[in-house]
Amino acid sequence: MKEKLINIIKEAGNILKEGYYSNKDVNFKAKKDLVTKYDVGIENFLKEKFLNQFKDFNVIAEESDNSNIDFNNSIIVDPIDGTTNFVNQVPHTCISVGVYKNKKPFIGVVYNPILDELYTAQVGQGAYLNGKKIEVSKQNIFQKALISTGFPYSSGTCENDLNDVVQKIKYILPRCQDIRRLGSAALDLCYVAKGTYEGYYEMNLKAWDVSAGIIILNEAGGKVTSLSNNEYKLFEDKYIVASNNIIHNDLIENLNHKVIY
Ligand code: LIP
Image (tube, rainbow, N blue to C red; front, side, top):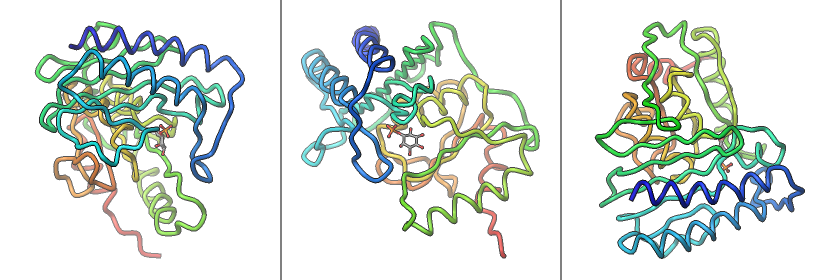
């Protein structure tokens, strides 16, 4: 199944690449949440191929109405993760596809056709970037850890979320090496998997943002949990916390630190 998936995703990558260098019709799902004809076009392309090739699976996808689809044997699709980057020609953008059997992780594929980076993993078989095995960083000192994060699409009215973002950055920034915000959760997880970042956290993500990245990171030796350090649950947890495993407890502790003003 993995090879077939990869071939289909690579074909879809050509559509993403064509769109990246073209004029796009940008629409707004919400005040800050963009969608283009390419998100919809890639999603339709992938859905048709997947439903045709993999009859035992349903497809849960970002731009679709998923209300009647049960998460079980599911292919979870983000046609363009990092849509704001895609629209603005920031090359941190990708197609993300996570395959789950009986709700359990099976195969993850994240493809950035702009930088030609193909991240793949199947449970029990390791994680790969363009066919080469990848592993998490061995850094064990939190002060030297490069941490990535993302900001929720919350509008100005979502005070609690925004305060939480600022508080966490204020506490963590002086205690780690530095913080990055590149705008694609799927790729951020892959960057922890290949050892570029030691850790990553974000709130309010959707299952399609992380379904593939968490499989790739786990297979590269990393760890993915909720903010309370329990196993991360797709569709349920507000926060995702990911790391090279070694600094995980430090990251959790720092994220949970209450700042009193
Ligand atoms: C985006 C993420 C990004 C995050 C945004 C959003 P989209 O996905 O990957 O990192 O900060 O909240 O969810 O909308 O571009 O597929």
